[in-house]
Length: 251
Image 1 (cartoon, rainbow, N blue to C red):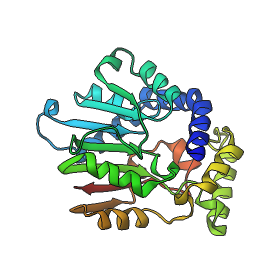
Image 2: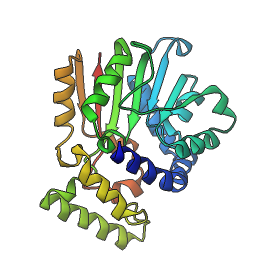
Image 3: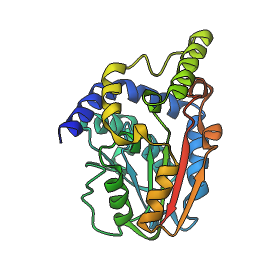
Image 4: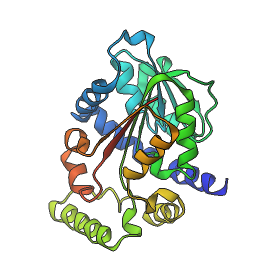
């Protein structure tokens, strides 16, 4: 519980700055690329019949673009400050999104409630990721789809080769004059948390695929190249050594 509180405190402090990143995404082409990516996996049936859960919504990016596209969204986050930012970013759409404060590892939903679960940059940050995956499977309907977008964030704290690649990223960012998405945050606090959560030391998405297989997901697909389609040029320079992947599971 203490680590969960530390994580909440960190993201509370990051909420405003992280929200600005989401606002830039919503104002640029990122939202188009991400919506195309999500719709590629979401069932083609009538949108109003689908229930989609956005876990770890942060400042609301996934929920906002999917609500604009006509989907019924429920969005959860453990950090109240993030939910407040999400509501502000959603603007007039806020009343159409069911925002709730909730722990991704202990969902307060009945079994088999949702057709689709989407989540981004969350799982690496969890104290109990296996428990989280079990919960996500529980609330998915039979045949429901899980879309988890993440990366090997902070693996460089435990791997010398990854550390060299991370330092090369920082050098490229400096050379191009871009904002460094790592060093502009409270990096010491985040690295302290990253050393305590289990997935910083795991090589993913191999780890995720194994867990979903053991949980009994009927189909599992891994996309190692999704970052090429959805990341901006700034993200590609900042995070070249930690490319985003997609883990798709069908219950």
